[in-house]
Length: 120
Image (cartoon, rainbow, N blue to C red; front, side, top):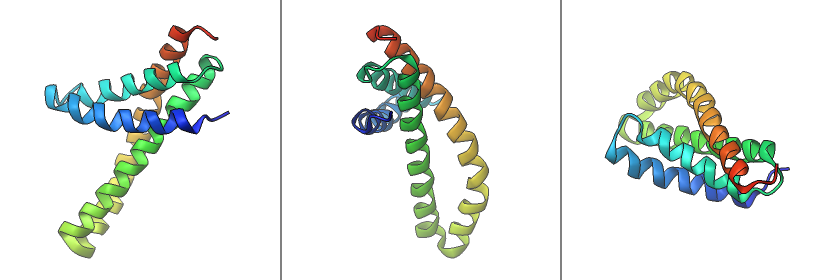
């Protein structure tokens, strides 16, 4: 069962931590932000490890989708129709990779957070 409160908190935490940690190190910072957000979501979910993985994965996927929408808007603002088209076509492959990456990293963090809580 999806606990939307934990998913929304995880999404907000992932955006904030990814932005802050990317200033520290642009290579591993965003991934560490996703991982720590997954740990927070996994700790908030109290129904076992698999629910921690599931809810954290949904938070990561939600973040990836919002990032894609924001890049579409930015492409339309700065490049007009051509910019929107370029971001839509080339960004589709990027969003697929980003969805998988966010799902795996946040899911791993969610498993660890649920394991720390100890209900699984």
